[in-house]
Amino acid sequence: MDTKIIKMDEENIDTEAIDEAGRIIRAGGLVAFPTETVYGLGGDALNADSSGKIYAAKGRPSDNPLIVHIAGMEDLAGIVRKIPEEAYLLAERYWPGPLTMIFEKADCVPTATTGGLDTVAVRMPSNKIARALIQSAGGYIAAPSANLSGRPSPTVAKYVIEDLDGRVEMIIDGGEADIGLESTIIDLTGDKPVILRPGYITEEMLEETVGGVDVDRTILEGNSKQAPKAPGMKYRHYAPKGNLTIIEGQADQVVNYINEHAYAFKKEGNKTGVIATDETAGRYQADSIKSVGKREDENQIARQLFRILREFDDEGVQIIYAESFDGKGVGQAIMNRLLKAAGHQVIKL
Ligand code: TXA
Ligand code: MG
Image (tube, rainbow, N blue to C red; front, side, top):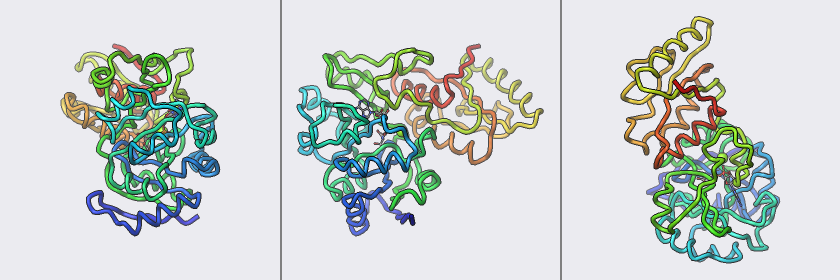
């Protein structure tokens, strides 16, 4: 298949191209598009065949449900059985934005979209290109992150093209994603809201709005025997091609450990890399040293992490060491993604 690639400025929407993209989706085709979190791989959420095509294009197991993207609150009632009070409070505060809520699904949502579940995940993105596309496509776009299954989620179009060129009808390049990590997922179908995937909207922010929330414990634990409630969280994810290990400890110890080990691997002929911070980047010795930003600026770290993982692949780096981050606030999401990328290989000094 020939993939049409279109560049678009969020502040200057090309309505003709959006019309064309909307027609593709309504006809059962696929369009990759920017959102404020990461790029999405979109198809008609109410068409079981489209969802099948999404799984095929991503190479994703079909028991892993998709998120349905809407553009207006009035469209929520069309795909869910009931809207709990918390959902109104959360939507008021955080929609449009990087929050996904799980509801009991209405009959019109095919189980092909929900991975066989009776529930449906719904998000209203804030990116203007995404919103225009959802409207043009008829209101409901199912979209996982626009990467091949297992690879880091794309935050720039370059990596969408690398993974999906020839697999989708169109890719819209809207520049770099603002947030850089996928949405926070909160399940509203039980007695108490439960966070299934941490993100930019933190546990503290959610608690402020709806009182007590629980966190799915499998999110941060490496070897939990329990299956995570968001089926996608059980798969190895975000992985760079190189072997990634997280080193936890005091800054000096971490720098020394990484330098020693990177040197040993380099001597054996490996290309080595370090995920550092602005504070420490100058102290490392390795083939490729990348700072994710200032330690205190978690939003910048979130924005850059996935791109940096991909860059190590571009450079053919085989051994990667990463510093560890504080697991509070947005740091919870950063550590969750980094741990998954590392397959939970952590060395505590
Ligand atoms: O920010 C985002 O959420 C991005 C952009 C494109 O919107 N999308 C995204 O989709 O990250 P994806 O498919 O890569 O991740 C969806 C996650 C998976 O872990 C999946 O298992 C979970 O959401 N999920 C979807 N529907 C669910 C449901 N009904 N119950 C529990 N988990 C669900
Ligand atoms: Mg994904």
